Image 1 (cartoon, each protein chain N blue to C red):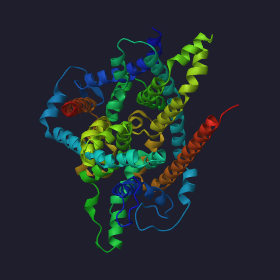
Image 2 (cartoon, each protein chain N blue to C red):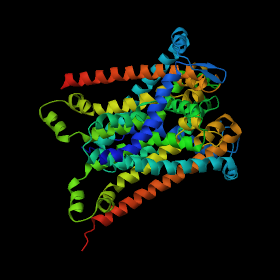
Image 3 (cartoon, rainbow over the protein chains, first blue to last red):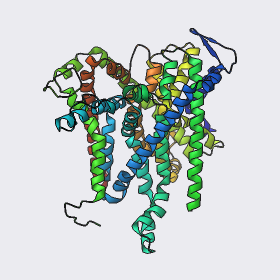
Image 4 (spheres, helix red, strand yellow):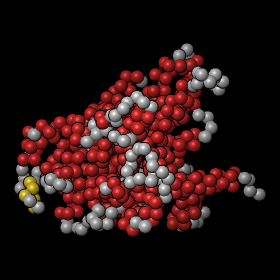
Length: 279
Length: 271
């Protein structure tokens, strides 16, 4: 009983601040907006609009594609770095870990803004290329497109991918690797058949840590995405801002959450069954 | 393993590590550069050195006000979420609780929901309940976001230590409260410090929830967001960013120095 008492403050806070808001979000998605008021009668109109206007579906799919690419890129880039710190660095691992997290102490907004400086019309890359004589006019296509969103997000979330992968690599029992080598596996096959499968939990955690927050991001697309880089988060945000249509925003949010949940379930199911096959 | 390679054939991993660090550092390093640049525009070419923006930063009450708000919320949220997390972590690791799995899963939900969804659902609830938006609503949202992180940190620390130490405390005649204070607390202390630091950092840098749930009183990230739209405010914002960065670097370095000293004292044999 005491255990439940100790758990209750947290539990109550979560019911009030998490369960109730999600129920209300779901309810609101079946209401309608009339000027500043809600029409509180049950209606599928918002969902009908979601499925009949291709723009919502397109933006949701585009957001998932962008986040998917960001996730793959971030994890692929982070893995060798995590491997390097876990296996190649003998002393001062902590220093290396701190070295990796230092850039992320800068405000998230400023880190995103930094890419405007990098890719902008009078930015680092353009000025650099001009002063080296490679181009005479600044390249305008660097900024304000889906690619600049991908680059910025991959940079902003790098630490979230490295740390979990590093932890799972660090946990691996080194004698397993020696055993594999002694039994005649090559270094590469040892990696594929021992190290990689054992580090999979870290890779999965890293993928989720990057994928889930980036799908809903609207900060990065509105700073570096331009019109072509808009994501579903921008639409949700505008429904609660300029467009003043909260019920429609709620319906888009519910559909986005549902889609993301399905994708994550498929991903976890896929990685689970592939791990079973290896084992 | 340490083979001395000729300089023209370096270890691929080292080359990769250097390239990777360049990728994560380079963009961020341009921010302080422009805080010293003698021009309103964040663009090349660099004009000249100035401390003007640091002067503007000190004389900008609305920016300092936003900074103060963020520090206040961060401190309160860090203390509250660590307290909640400590109680919950103790409950989970020390008592047999039927239904523990689903309860923990429920508490961890904020970790797997995009923040924008958390933000708008809280906004809907708060406005339907006719509660005015304020720093309190932002703080409450930050508390929800931070509790799961506190719990993760503290559960892993509490799972690590031997229960028999607590039992010994009780057997030797301490009451439950004194046992907690004199046995459990010192052992869990590093976890508590880690949780305080982590939750303060999360709250201090959190933008999305604050964007939806704050009113006229902005937090620092909300202020930064507005200054990104008004180029004239930007250089002073970059100056503040650089200052905060240097301060946190100093604090972390100091904390690490204290920790190492502590380790040295612990490891010297006492007579």
